[in-house]
Length: 52
Image 1: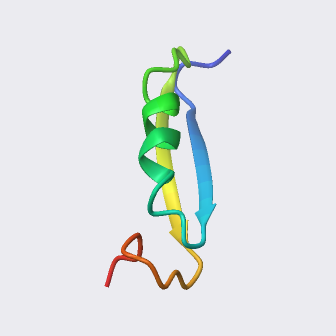
Image 2: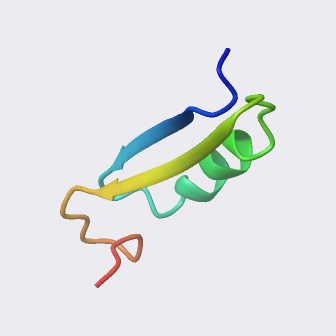
């Protein structure tokens, strides 16, 4: 593994207000042994999970 490369975790969401926190909580403590980023993509949600 090259510790200089970044791992991108892309999470598409649609009306997942209730579950997105649990998903992030499960991913954040993962020991990836390298730099990482989490990208959450809103696909037109109508619940409070959407960010204006």
